[in-house]
Image (tube, rainbow, N blue to C red; front, top):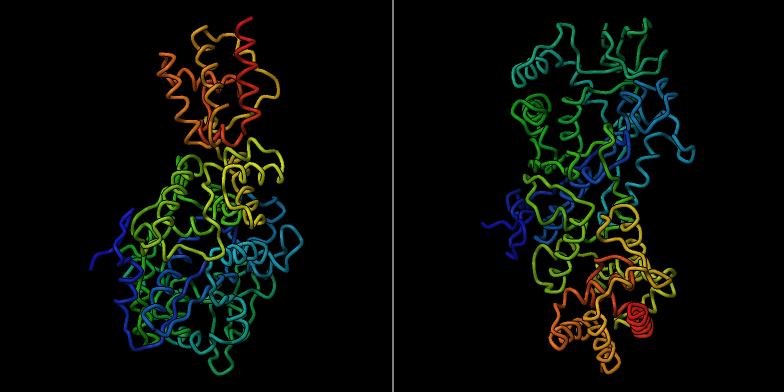
Length: 513
């Protein structure tokens, strides 16, 4: 079975292969999950969108399937990250669901980072059932599984040591109590277990000895045991996860044996994925500050294009994201795909509410010419674009504005000069003559559009016996005060007949003095 990748238009996509590989006669649950310990970035998006693509492919096959997103908000704060004030050092070790919100507008630290991520998922047309680990633990949903783990701690220890090839302390137990004194998720010494009352006696590093009731969520399992426990409890059948978990002896390998031997259940169908890296900076991670959050990315990139970033590459292929010129290339690539409208990649990327008819590169030019919303609409209307849905058009234009401000390289940025730039005084007599011919052609042009303007420059070059590149340079100097600029046809079309012809006439006259 052939799988698409890159720019292929084959109908069978990697998500379809996953959908065909799983059992066809049972209900399915696809689980995704991220710890909201910091800004949830573009790299994290790969997990949830990968799950969503498999979900959609399975739905199309007529399978019974549900997609969940589990927010691991019961994890501890591990350190004061670069984006946090030093005052947060007092919360290290506490569950992030119990830590105050950094901005004071959310009920917890975890929700502060989770809320914008969930809104971004809606824009991306990803609609999972959202679970929170803190609520699952504290509702008692995992009580029986935790009891099973504590009763089989020795066997679990043997599995972990053998499969991961590492040595654990003799007293190791795969359960972390939440200390009633220091409130931290503690790698405490476990002193006893009352399975009937669901109580664990412990001695915390802070010196406190006490009991916790795991049926009330007063403790949690260590990660390598928590993961397979959830597979069994939630009946997870498919799960995407990062390549670190997929390494030999990694948490998927240990989880697979634990879920089979301890919980008498099956491991999910694995979809291991590679990282998304930021060009020139490496793999994205909130903890290192090398990241672009999904919500900030959606400020500049249409959501269907962000989906396409994941759709077009097989999960095991690393993605390097370039928010500069690489983004324009990606948007252009998707626009060509959307124009054809018949590829599987387009089917899995498209979002019906997104307008894609105005090229992003053209908007990058327009928003640097037009300084307000009315002017943007006027310029686009003059260029022949459908601006009936002005809200959608302006939202797309706003993305282009933000991209220019934050990510555009200098070669893309420009400013239309209000006054005639001094560079026009360097024009040669030959160049001024060519510009006079060009203005005459512009005045007689049947329609003011990019193609006619582009052709007029080349015909002028032939008549004046001058390289058309020199004419383009003169145009940029007269309007921008620099030698280069955006694609001339679109640029001049957007500026309009009156402004362009008046400025070129002024430039010819000034240069002749």
